[in-house]
Amino acid sequence: MQEKPYFCPNCRSNRVKFSMISSFSQSFLKDAISGTVQEVTEPQRIDETEPTIQCMVCSFTGNEMRFVKQAEREPRAGTPANPAYY
Image (cartoon, rainbow, N blue to C red):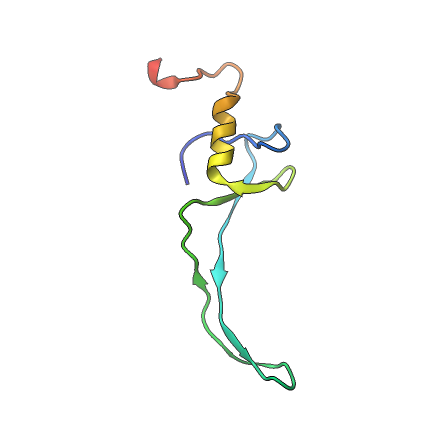
């Protein structure tokens, strides 16, 4: 997860409340007749190249760069657009 500001590209009001969504895989075997679970493996995290972020205001979900790029396009009022020069 990057240490950069986020801005929701959907509701365009949230800059603060977000969730990071991660994925897991878990295998299991079921009985073909009764449907009961007979064997379950431990959950394994699925490594993703880029985190999936969810806006906690409008529930929009997308990759992290969508939120970062939206924040770069519309910087917060009173904040320098490029802080490296200040």
